[in-house]
Length: 143
Image (cartoon, rainbow, N blue to C red; front, side):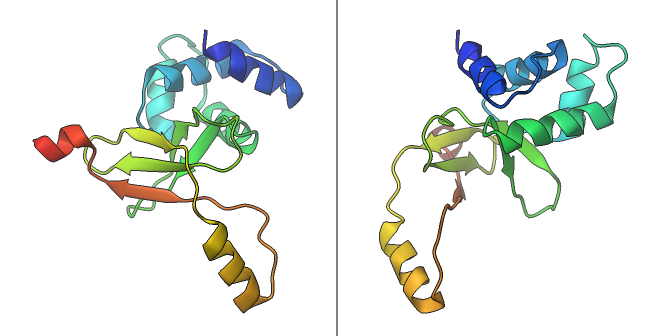
């Protein structure tokens, strides 16, 4: 089961494997799109009667910090999260469909030449990067 990998990531990060954390991970694994913390909370509080929104925010932040979730930046300035299915790979990017909100991983990275140029021009050292590409997926493009 795919969730076993994420449970191992929790263990390596010394985070407790709580029913709520597992439910958050399962929620994102079952959905390939991004969600607001409020959407996650509304869905999960059906199964957890005493689940508070602050608990959701804390869990989302912790899962983001260890690479299980990614934070999605949108023009509306709201906070969104999605599962990072390639969190095993350090450098990869995400394509986000602006219509259906589906998130897809992009496994290749051709950032090295740009990084060298940035480092030379700014006299700095890049240690990591994140790229989010937006557009319409093939299904939405055909509609």
